[in-house]
Length: 255
Image (cartoon, rainbow, N blue to C red; front, top):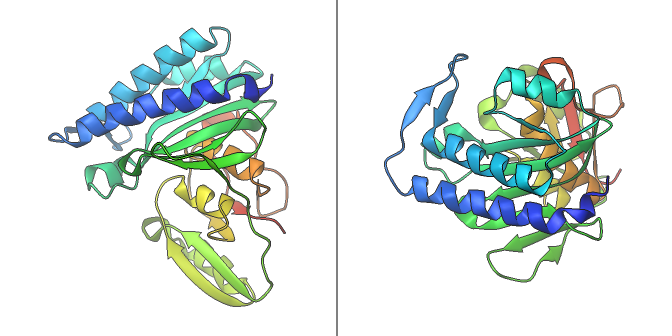
């Protein structure tokens, strides 16, 4: 199933969800907690409803897996060989803290691999996306999209992008094992993948828990920019796993 057929529509849906999130962002943020004690807001739920509705209209035969859908809905959707995977508001904690570092994530998965997707940054009105031509682009507001590409490391200087709030001992040990001049840059949500995709960073090691909807869209953008995401043993990070929990992984640009 070629993602290119839906590329423009998914970008448009992401933009609509982003605009909706910002309507809530400019009001008092209402915070509740789910059964796992993770926070959820009206913006998460409203964006999820909008995206599910739009995807159902666009591709009625392709099911949707989303962080805010029920476990039963997600399990049923995963039985299909192809599905959309959505995080309607990735970085809810950052959204609550009003840091601006949160995203809308939508990706198409087929046979366990991302085929394309969009990472939209609402507070910056910026999109990272795979286009009809199969390449990745960055678009800021209404400006012309700019093609982005992962860079080849120079062998001396390595920019590592990571999250300070999720910096585990294993992640620190991995970073310490890298050779060269290491610069660590902090970023939130799936923007970390996009920083590598646009050549602003070289590697994103994640030795901590993530869910498939956290990574799929960023993974898609990075692949189309020439990068990759793999497990520490060098095998590819795949999707539609039991429980949708990712193993540790390393996202990087051109080797």
